Length: 146
Image (cartoon, rainbow, N blue to C red):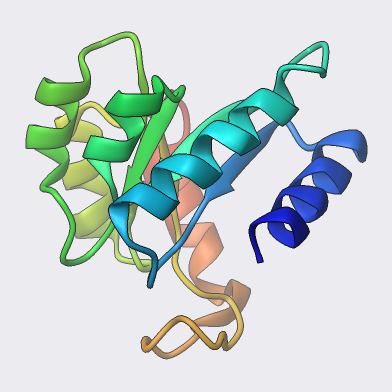
């Protein structure tokens, strides 16, 4: 599965993706680190190189020296994530389409916010909110993130 995943990520980078998030919900630490290193080595061939973001796992992010970390419900608190990452790393926070969460993410020092599911997914237990949530979030965070 690792080779197939890295091939798909390569295709995304070759297609112009400016950031790649490695999201492995059911993978142990050693396998996550191995895939992160493999992905990072693959991304090094691109110029400009896409940002490399690790989902959920601060330990993996730090071990492989990824560009950043993305956190959501049940993960490390964004304030703690920012403190442990330091100012030189990218921090993304899922807000699930909620203005209060977006405000908390901004205060925590995030660089970008995720809005949550816009369509159903096999790995998301939340109800997809569609694109209707976007206007209120954009209005609230415009110019305050990143």
